[in-house]
Image 1 (tube, rainbow, N blue to C red):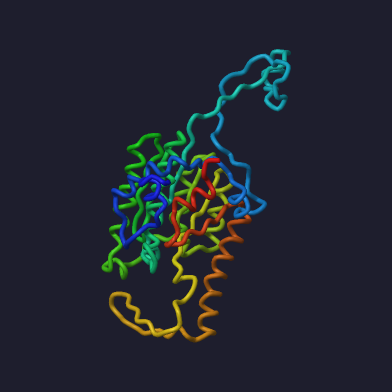
Image 2 (cartoon, rainbow, N blue to C red):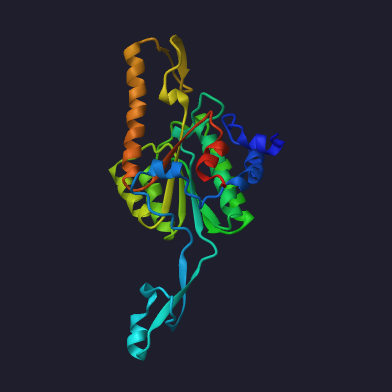
Length: 315
């Protein structure tokens, strides 16, 4: 029988806005996630170009005399030539590595028809990954962004860093109101990717949580440069209504200012609608797969914890 904490962690998100208490409480559920595990399912999503998991980096420590069994690739040829005796380099593994979370809270994420909005799902995914990274002994940081601004959290191995990231995610989530829908957009996806390229230290684990609205050739180039030296995974929140029209009938819609009516019984309309979403998702999957970046779809009615367990659960 599942505990109440586990059962609550496995539940889908709910509502149009996040609850800070729920994001903090996900700390216990995230302990079963091991972000350094590369499951076969994740490798399949990333395609044949997925690099081996880079894990923690290594730092140079010292040079000493070569001993039988040492890796010849680590021989320091300069010291060997100068001293006349073979010497080898020693390295030590970093105890920590940066885990960067990019959490999208733009207007395009402020949508949902089942259980929760995409923006709430993104906040929950970010909280789970942040707590899991801290539990794994990694430094945690990242960027929370919307259409106008972003907030950077410097990677640190501390509970305060996770709480700061969660707090910023929650704050930006609650900025998503009707009044904001018509404001002038000043940031786009390429601006955020450029900032990520600036702050990402080689060897980082990067989790980009976004519906990738605005993804274009420039974004693809930026993602390529980022993923060359980092392990990057994209989590793609979506709602079932984006994928498929509701059952045949008449439906009233509103954007807060105008109302209109839609008939969903037209077969060709339904097919075009579904094909549009399918084509966009396939386009993203192809472009990211070329770079070895896994694209993980997560629906608003899915359990974010169960989804992450499928790819990063402990064995």
